[in-house]
Length: 261
Ligand SMILES: Nc1ncnc2c1ncn2[C@@H]1O[C@H](COP(=O)(O)OP(=O)(O)OP(=O)(O)O)[C@@H](O)[C@H]1O
Image (tube, rainbow, N blue to C red; front, side, top):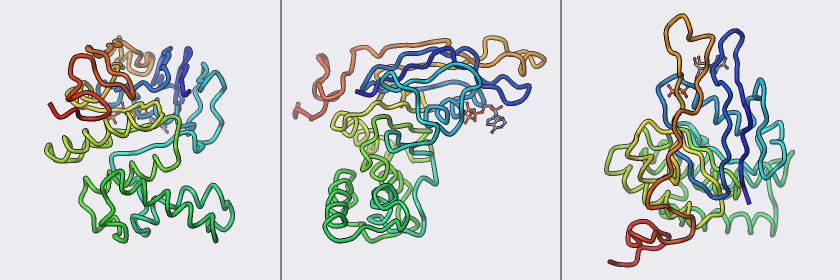
């Protein structure tokens, strides 16, 4: 389970109201694409789900319980850039999360614990197609490979909720299509709920189960500070997609495993 309940959430910075009265239930294993004009508070919303920012008012629950005050291993995040550590190799980047949580002070694992962690990391690296690049550093990877690495780094921690902030926004169209296929597979195979901010409507409709739009209802310059953005649309994708199940209508394209049609 990994359902999110956002109930009457507001976010204000000083006099500026950024988000206003946001309420939404996100069902377990959904893939929500969040769209909206620049500056309307999409990243702020993700940061609240991550636990980096508290709401000014309202509550956010995960599986019925309040979010912990700090980002925890139950939530993973991938940004458009800079999610990975430049001074660690591919393997080091995927291992670091385990090392930090298991060996809190030394950030090093030993013996069988280390062996098990390395095995898990290698399996995850294979999942995202980077086995041949295990010893490379991020600067030696293409943009698409870096984002695959960022996904592996987040997913090895088995997050219940994966938060994506325009993770594919800087990639070329061809590479983006490839990584969309990978993302779809990862969503089907891993038990997680995904919330992704994107500027790209095509991406939203390609990947999501539901597209949610944030917008300011009143946007005159003198009203900008007094009214925040809220949810103005909430569109389920048709035909419906369900994690782990092929789509009824396009099983060849929209499912966990390509059927070879
Ligand atoms: N820490 C902060 N302190 C003060 N204001 C902030 C802070 N973080 C965000 N804001 C303000 O909140 C508003 C929303 O910013 P946010 O980055 O969430 O928008 P966005 O929808 O993600 O934009 P974009 O699509 O351009 O990335 C902006 O006006 C920004 O200046």
